[in-house]
Image (cartoon, rainbow, N blue to C red; front, side, top):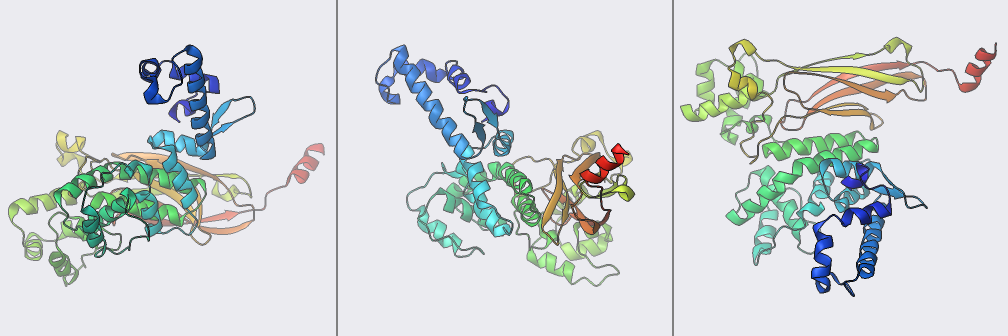
Length: 419
């Protein structure tokens, strides 16, 4: 797919020529039986390659990744571009596109993620089906009525990750493999959903990304992200009767030392882990401006400039700490991760996603969101969302009122030009 998207391959003949520069082309005459060749002559090899290219391109066209015209010219489609960008298999992008719907919730997105073709090669060991089904009984989402396979295993291991369920060592290895690919697959799901213009499923997929990184369900208290925070500590924080209630990670930082020590009751080394997480937890200032908001007419392009700025005290930070800005603190995610943010404009009442951009934020980032104004004049209540891909509880949303005037239709404008 990547070669088609980058225009390296633009025709069927390009694809055949491309294969002649691969190791496969050298292997064909050396081991024809393995590849099912009838002979080793140039004619046999050419026929084999042509047939293989036709089959593969047919599959890509069927999955709506590419388009082939009557002359054999190949052009990439949106799904193909998404698959190439995230380097995922065309079967996965086909599953995503055919499965998402306007009413898809987190459970649906989780099942779509588990069905990704990247997970089809997970090993199925002797006797583990019983263990997986026992683990599944303790999880919120029941298993589908289907034979045991790698995708069912993926669904259960992801739920175990969110529930922080202890699992055997061999399944932990499989879980690490799943967690490595899961974030990029969720990003691809968000892109496919946004291509359809659906807001709520896109927000659900973004919440799933946070769940994967922090190892929590979206309904869990955001304080449980903090290292060593047990249900008992969270309960004490919720029951705290101070001047300000403890509702977020930021509130932990504002507590007096003696109050914090009494609530957490952790040794110094664990308290240091808590401090690191709380200091890394993103405090983002969001500002936005609608360009020419008084002159928006039906069908006009609308531009919203959004600025995200991390609130940090750089004077008191060391060079190492400055270099680590944007690095995610995630004790249960086994890989390094940099923060990403989705900036979204949508209409919650109609479930319409107007514009979406994904940004990597270190200190400050400015992004322009563009979309066409609605076709009907009136006042619209839109919402600007700033969604983290890594942390729970730090998402922001702002009400955005857009007044759309009736624009001039083509007949009126042409009459004015004639006059």
